[in-house]
Length: 219
Length: 219
Image 1 (cartoon, rainbow over the protein chains, first blue to last red):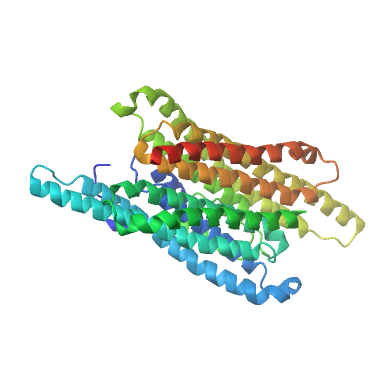
Image 2 (cartoon, rainbow over the protein chains, first blue to last red; image 1 turned 90 degrees about the vertical axis):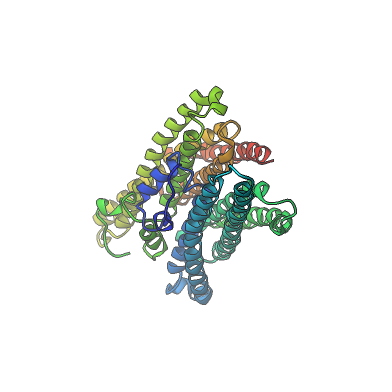
């Protein structure tokens, strides 16, 4: 925890899966749950793309081909956003920890450190907020493809819904843990007081709708 | 979908994260939701280990140090099991697809193909069943560490609970999609008729308990 990471060292996409798991497991809090939530959303988006790819070009699904193609392309774009947000989360949290380690001997240093912590906390709360919003879009795509995509892959649509719902709710926890570090009455605090409960409610409702369709098609 | 993968090509742990996402996204159904569920459980296990590592050796948490250490070590072992199950799931589903491509010109070929499909489907159902059981153990660890681990990492305990709950329920979907391929009255069918609803109920109850502790400590 006592070394500063360069941003390039925090890029997660080039890591091997076993390396990612090792880094998550360590006592270094970066990468942590915020990045894990974003990556879970990216895995969900990938599964949506797979279900779409298994639907497009099949005679049995010709009537939903255009919508499946649109869903697959949208999921691909959202996946890239979530991979970038996983990195941003690690960078933001690292900056927050760096700010906390600033010197606090003099009054001037203490004031500068307090401002640095507030700024870093605002970013550390804003990144998972954006993660939750993007994951919500992916969950909406999973809900759309669950009732009409290739039936052989309906369990994959269900896993996509479960992972993106977990990503939303996990990202919300990461917003909430950073809020107390913001100054009283900060704009972000007021904004999220309505948005976070809405994101959690959407996660529950969209997940339930998707899983009801999956269960019906599993028979 | 028309090429056979060697088992070594299906190992997921050495893949880069961006490669995994690309493979999940493709129209090749391997790897798919079963492997994704197992990996989500492995990420959850890694986060449990991280929370434990941030708890052990801290004066403020001296009274829970022994339990935190035990939880961290247990999570590490379960993580390795889930990584292995992610690979097993890809191998089992590949074997199932290979069985379906066996020749069926003669009566003898058709009988051999039917037996091969039944055997492969039994494995393709058994692997996610074991995934769900192992992910359930990780969720139990997340529930234990949520109320007593390092408070700065309580959101990470929450993400661990969310991801392992999603892993259990996603794995259950992967058991269910394979059950219709088993012969009527197969032992596995009888066994899971009680176990799957229990696993889903445990996932919901343990996740809710963990998140209640997380929310209380987030303030």
